[in-house]
Image (cartoon, rainbow, N blue to C red):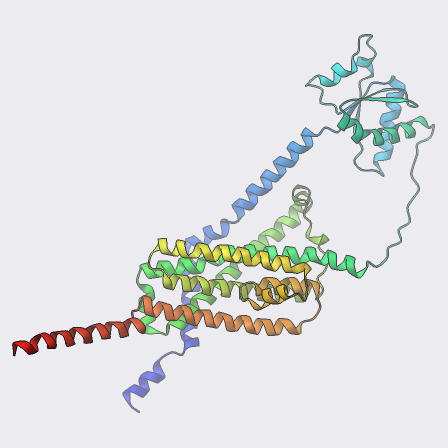
Length: 429
């Protein structure tokens, strides 16, 4: 066999070369110190947001007082407090009653001045009798508490403790409209999570390419293996690193929720258990979520690689990536808007456009049960990834490796220079 034949057989195929590049990048990034700090990066905003939410909730609770002063006779005040404790077993949101009967017994007791003292902090003050209570306080606070105060006074006026009758529950199946309205919450939450993860992690592809361009490593790789394989390997390596990061964050979130789930719900007001089940069921929906994250990451990452191929400096990368980031934000808004317009031309456009397709289809999985469309759209998304990679690698060869059209232009310039030189020599002869 000829030397050329041996060389052709020894050369790696595109997939083999992509696997080599992916394995190299994956190991290099995963076992670097920067990856450890990358994992810690999102935890700081979450921690700060949780602390800010907790402090804000505490300030709000302290700013809105639930304590009410009772300036009745000692017997009536005790009856009011006992009735409130009895009712609290069945009703939430009742105010805290504090007896100030001793202070109110003074001849010169001024209810308005009593409430205006800054050290008091009572919402309103109750005086009078159980049969005719008088509530003193700001108009907004009186409107808020007059109903509970009337209920407590009515219960305290009776000889025996009052209990409400037991309610029998008769649950009916929700209507189709109500069910769809509930599933929209799941679709919106899934889209938001997909968007945040994609935008947070896709930038690693661009930073990795810029770093290797600065170190001339990418040119060595491009001289040894096809540029398509380099781009494909880098994409899948960063996707694997992203999945590792998401797994770590998911385990941490699960541990935190197991330890302090109730406290987190009270601070944030969000409980994942209240999300309605998607139309395709949770197992299929979670699987589709992973697949659509991979496709969204590959699509955006391939676009970032194309930007890296067009840029020659870090400043150019930042300038060119900003419009893509803004476009991705608009794409997310488009997919979010089409949730309430199933089957419309706008939803079809969002599904057909590659960058918005993963977001639109994930929302569709939460709302509709059909699965065949997901297979067709995933195939189209894979084709779009291949086309973007091909375009990006071609741009890289022409702009960085100076091949293709740039090489032909250089040959033409050399031919024109030779032609001009010969024309200048002929008259001298």
